[in-house]
Image 1 (cartoon, helix red, strand yellow):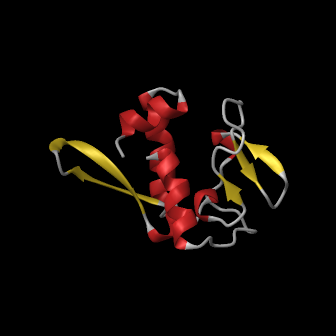
Image 2 (cartoon, one colour):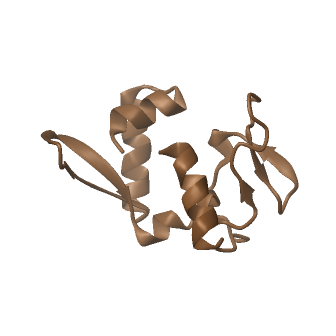
Length: 109
């Protein structure tokens, strides 16, 4: 994904997104590389550790509450989740099966 797309999806400025991305890179959850389709652009990729976020957890349900401010759901805490509450370091994370992970990630692709 591109930084501009990420900022747009989160409704934040590119500068704010850049600061967040740098923090995730420093934690080893993301890495940056040149975009294949435009050598001037930077693309963002999840590391193996970065994949173990809410979206890869068996408790995560993408878009269970469509149209709501918190459209996603965590089955562990039985509560709706907004994008801002998605976690990258949840100690209760239990890896979901590959099909569920792919389905969850498609929501954000």
